[in-house]
Amino acid sequence: MNEVAPAYVKLVLAVGRHDKDYVDAFYGPAEWKREADASKRPLSEIASEASALIARLEAIPEPADEMLRLRRAYLTRQLRALSTRVAMLRGKRLSFDEESRALYDAVAPVNTEEHFREARDELDRALPGRGGPASLVERYEAFRKDFTIPKNKVDGVFRAAIAECRDRTLEHIALPPGESFTVEYVTGKSWSGYNWYQGNSRSLIQVNTDLPITIDRAIDLACHEGYPGHHVYNMLLEKNLVRDRGWVEYSVYPLFSPQSLIAEGSANFGIEMAFPGHERVEFEKARLYPLAGLDPARAEEFERMRQIVDRLAYAGNEAARRYLNGEIDAAAAARWLSDYALYPRDRAEQRVRFIDQYRSYVINYNLGKDIVRKFVESQGGTPDNPAKRWEVFAMLLSTPRLPSQLTKPPQAAPSS
Image 1: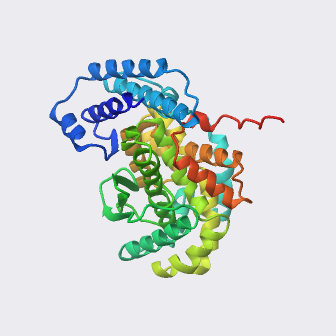
Image 2 (image 1 turned 120 degrees about the vertical axis):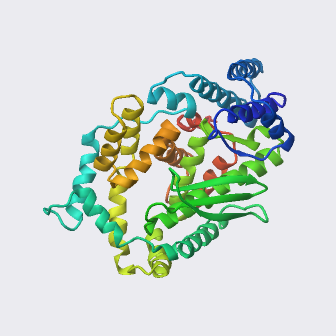
Image 3 (image 1 turned 45 degrees about the horizontal axis):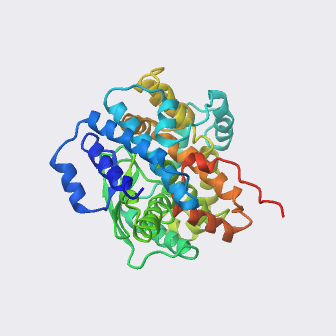
């Protein structure tokens, strides 16, 4: 595996020459990047080498050590995902579910319109203006405006959220000394936030300010992109696998791979880890609302609405599935997002652009979160056992596990 790993990294970098979104992070030897940049290897050649590397891995006898077994399974599955992405770049067409299984090692459940109507109806009853001329989306957007952070206060609110997320994470996870990240505010992106991990425990976090940012997004982004989300995940992989074990395959992160489901799922679940139960709204009310110049007395009201809308999280998957399967066009996908995810027109159109760019990647946020939560709780990390919950979560962030491995039922302890 020590011979396959460098070849895998170089193949990922080679695919990145054909696909600008493919290499999300790389902090391995600089000469490997220079070598990849010097020539653009043909996709057919990349595909052949990937197949050869998979065959080499499959020929290795089953390791006795669990971490080595996990390593071999990870390398094999990542290479299979790479082969699929290369085939797509060469013109192969896959259905939404075929693509997500091949790239992310998981398939999202199918939900119909009826599945989302209960949450829509509950929100309809809870929001002001029922029975008037405004649509549910219009009423929800009017409500959200009262909780929008003024642009000149976004940075202060975001940095306060980051500091709290970091403090809460540090209570449970030891972070490398000197870890840090830079925050930038950008426009013209299809996403709302992004973490660019740069190695040596450093990240660049970008926040998209194209659309208004509501108060709840401060905690969402601070946890997801920072602590205990992407920044912590990447740091733990670098320390525990790259530096401590010398596993160079983790010095590169191919975006369209099973690793992304773990990354996005743990980042979204990390919000609940850092702010369990009622702690989130209490912190927002005490600290973030005043910083944003918003009325803390309405924090509970906004939290109730947010929890209802969260039940519509899988609606975006259905829009993407139908759109990418050719059942609906871009305009119809935006309408679906408006009707069933309650996105206003500008956010719906932005999300369709995200689907155009990242395709079935959308499953990694909601399905990934649910898979990570179920795994943590199956290992004893239930909400009433926070110490164990953090222990299992940190273990997941530090080991080479695949989505399909997380969904296997836990094995019973052998009887004595």
